[in-house]
Every structure is written in structure tokens, then in C-alpha cells.
Amino acid sequence: MKRICVYLGSNPGNRPEYRQAAVALGRELAERGIGVVYGGSSVGLMGRLADAALEAGGEVVGVIPELLVQKEIAHEGLTDIHVVTSMHQRKKRMADLSDGFIALPGGIGTLEEFFEVLTWNQLGYHAKPCGLLDVNGYYKCMADHFDRMVDEGFLMSEHRSMVLTSDTPADLLDKFAAYEPPVVEKWIERKKGL
Image (tube, rainbow, N blue to C red; front, side, top):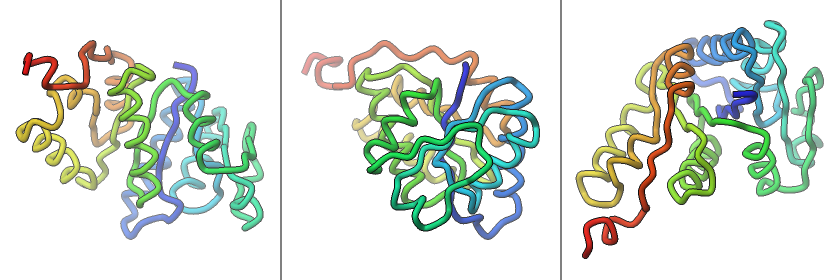
């Protein structure tokens, strides 16, 4: 893997563990020679991830819409920054530059971006690993809900297995290295012959 896209909060969150996880992931990626692709911001967890990866000698590529640059939150010390005109362009560019996707704690934007690339994976638009860095159980309820989707017949277990989860950056990246995408159609009715 050359680069991994990281989705995470533009706010720091209320727990120091969230900031510590962003720093740890940035360092771990740099130490493994894997570049970071992220939203290009200097604030919140986003800024901490970028700073940690840069301080550890890593490559950090930001992708940020013009509107956010104008609000003066663009990180000025990145390896490279792509300024785009829309959020749609931002998400596509981030996906095109990346070999995998990780979500740390964050808000609505973090979830929306992660779910979009996860959906693309399910539909076969890419076969890149998608994972949750589950800091302090932040994503436990989401993991439980994925299991419920399987139980209720809305998600195949093979697609459930696409969501890699760990509470440490090193373990999650090891899972990424071993990832093999499922080869199965999305539609349960077709699989069951209904």
C-alpha cells in the first residue's frame, strides 16, 4: 500500500484518547512508509494526524475544497495539497489517491465519507480495505448495527467482513495488509435464488 485515506474529526473530541489515536496512526503510517491522504485541514484530529505523520517523516496529501481554504483552516505544511471546487470532487480525489480507507472518531462528515467508500466496495467499484479505528469503543454501536443488518437480511455476512476493526493502528494496518475482498454479489435475493 502506497497511501491510506483517513477520515476523522475536524474537531478534537472530548477525550484525549482520540487525539492520541490520531497521533499514533499518523506515526504508524509514516513508520511503515505509507502516505496519508486526508481532508487537508489544520484543525481537530485532522491536524494532529497530519502533524504526527509529517514529524515522523511521512508523506501527507491533503484534499480540500476552496470554501474551506478560504476559511483559513487548510494545513500549510503538507507534502502536497489538492484544492478542489466541491465536496464531490474532494471525495473522488481522495479515493483515487488511496489504497485503503480508515475512519477514526469524527462526526457526520467522517461517517458520510466512510460509508460512501464502503458502499463503493460493496458494489465492486473498488476492492480496497475499509476499516474503523475503534478508539474507546467509539464505533462499537456501529459494529453492532452492521451485525444487526446481517441478522435482519439487509447485509451479507461477506460484506460485513469488509469492515475491518481494531482499537490499535498497528493491528488495523496488519489487517489491511492481509485483506482479501469478498467476491459475492450485493443482492441477497439473487444469492438465495429468491
